Image (cartoon, rainbow, N blue to C red; front, side):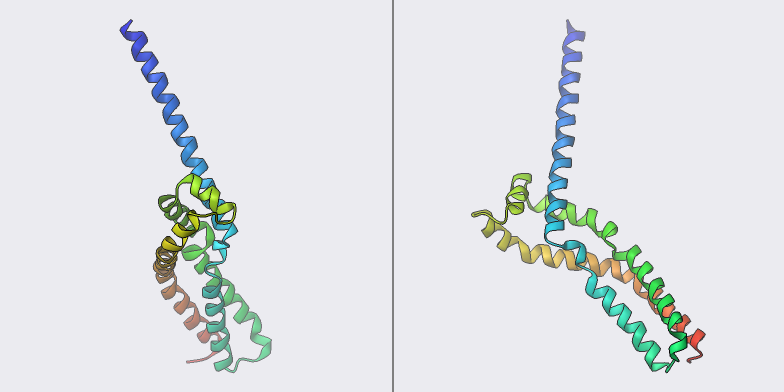
Length: 164
């Protein structure tokens, strides 16, 4: 009898933990879907553009001939790869999903996906400044890891172009 009770308890616990995992996965999926809807994957586009511009300016300042444009493009691609490692969507997405699942319940995320229904709209307005600031902080922290490597690539490009 005691063994049957233990087995029943174990099965109940397993079922409940399985449900909790499914609920967490569903919650995360809703957060990910909201982030996609909000175009959070484009959060770092300005950073990439700024780095591309930095290389283009370096190329222009070097007065490099148009025939050497492939050097610029190669270094821009290398810089993009470094940025991808630091702030690419696959790097940021898990942290942003966690940020949003901590801030909003699964039902709230479903409501957000249904285009902001009151009273949730008020909560979004209250939380959005914090979420925006935290997203920017996360991106900036990740970007700090790429800056030295990107600067090194600029120096390498200038050396290859004969600029001191």
